[in-house]
Image (cartoon, rainbow, N blue to C red; front, top):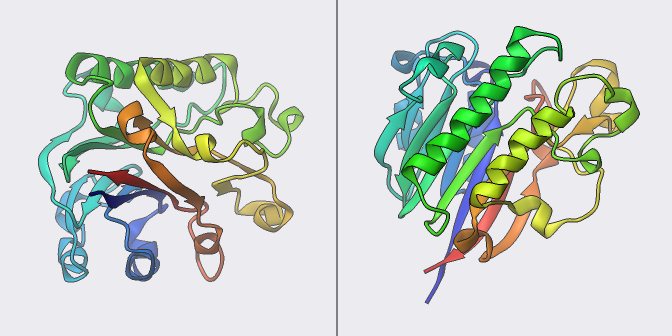
Length: 261
């Protein structure tokens, strides 16, 4: 007998500003696990009680400034590990892992990179390689594992509204896409892409210029799973409705349903 496990990821671009929307979304969609990025909160300010009132345990890793990641679960939350435990953590609280219903879950907020000639771009590539190394050192592709979050990389040209517009910019460069591909080569599957081959399906739209309504977006929020989980995926979705309305995040949630034993 199997039961579904619904895993979601959402860059909320300030949980302080977006908490009512997150509470409403959790009540409506009821994911089993939600990975949050860009909470912009310190651990002491994180609304653990509000999540508990909705039936969720929460773990958070943040310093109250620009980054911050969380794992929120209603199916258990064990063995929480924050950060890399290395000099990669100088880039801020961007990595948090926990075990939920026997699945190892990672919430990641990959650095932006700013520009191709920036030291921040070099640091972004190092961060992605560090994540791959964590997987290689501590996990096995045969294990049930997901890596969710804002990767700040569009996997291929289908994942941007106009490839020519982004030429020479971050998020689409050969080195970034190669770093993401190295994660997949370790043993991860982009489960949304496994469900939908078409382009033009995005998870982020700039606030400026009416980008959302014009369809000028990128798919940079990903749910990556090891093959044992990916082979059970029954459904995946970018919830565009959560990008609408008053004071939305510039990202939409992405979710995937897995049929697990």
